[in-house]
Length: 137
Image (tube, rainbow, N blue to C red):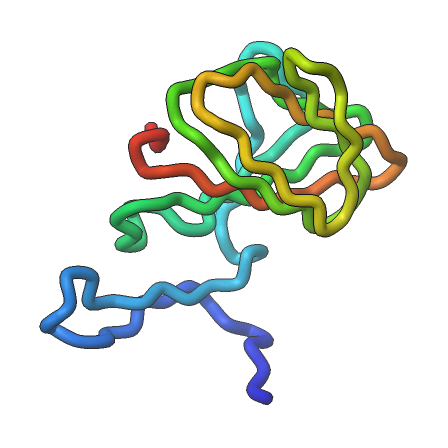
């Protein structure tokens, strides 16, 4: 098995006959991490791992990291998203109540549904969140 240690973001030409001719490869830690600066957010960062800037035509993949006691705003939007918890303990809050999350939890959040993610554990809470490009600002 080959190692990706030291890998830097790069585009690789796959074929000039394909609509998206380049493949993008990166390590998550090499993608810029930025604070989420929205009203109602606390101690949370985001990395836009895959989005239209790297050639993705349909979906974006984001990596969220919530510090201890961190949370997203309680919000809703028109697009669905899919979430996969990587590490830590958290809660997804919806109109129906709070639902516990842990590593390997998966969530499908339909468009229009009010929701919030909260770190409920002593360590960082980290998850991937995929959205359609219609949700990319």
